[in-house]
Amino acid sequence: MDWLALIVTLKMALGTCIILLPVALVLGRYLARYEFFGKWLIEVIIILPLILPPTVMGYYLLVVFGSNGWVGLLFEQWFGISLVFHMEGLILASVLFNLPFAIYPIQRAFLAIEPSILEAAALCGLSQFRTFVKIELPLIWPGLVSALILVFTHTLGEFGIILMVGGSIPGETRTLSISIYDKVQSFDFAAAHTMSLFLFLFSTIVIVCLGILTKKQYGTKDGPHLV
Image (cartoon, rainbow, N blue to C red; front, side, top):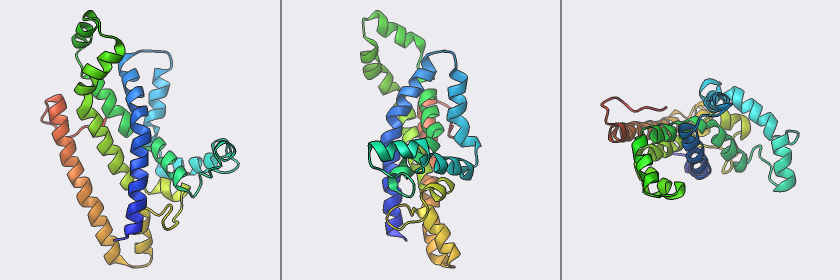
């Protein structure tokens, strides 16, 4: 096991979850509650990471995050941070790549709330903020946990985006998926097998957890729903 790569992977996954989940909570609720002009365009942008090949998205992120790209230039001028081939760039790329995995389970959870419950809260004089905290959040927690699990697990297995934006710098951007690729390239199949088995078992456990959460939230006997 490449423990250094595991630490880098966990740092990236945790950073992605911390940044993305609050954003997904706001966007998921807004998309579930309101109809507005251009909503379809926002939903198309959110779903793009599911459609685009990771290397294609990784290439364009590399261009935008580079020293000549507007995002990369902005971060260098304002924060003194270089995004390409650094952890900060990996986390930002991972946040963008995981948007659908975070937003759609949360949006689905908000849509599952009966409108009569919200109407009753309004009749009782609860403000929108108190309704959100005391009623909506407790009802959508399975969707929130599903989003957290999906984002965390999906980040563990990211490859194309990481390779394009971060490369394979030990202790900085080499994650487990990149390390597996490097081990195969060097014919160290035993190490590649160990890390691949770890990711396989972890992903299997996640699928089981998602199935349990799906049944608890929606009362169905179907398998887990990603969106």
